[in-house]
Image (spheres, one colour):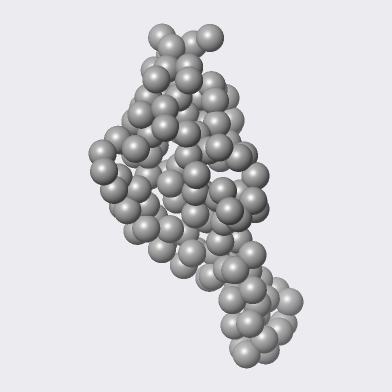
Length: 126
């Protein structure tokens, strides 16, 4: 499922989508909030420039919106239907979950967006 060469591997690990040999981010921890979106300029292994064009990652906002909607719906279903909480409490849970997972969703949206445009190249193996 997460073997090297799959888009899912690159998305979930945050590695370069072209060679999948190094992390795209300066700090691998998404909860280091001061560096959550700081990316390396290029991949040191294959040389891929992550900022493909100026303002490239603005498109990731649409992906982020979809991910946040999915997380919010999942939080509501779990809290309201499975845990039996009231509607008001469920909405508080949704807000809390969205705040807690915001750094992870930000990174995942960037990872998904760049993987839409850059494919893995097996000839760039170590």
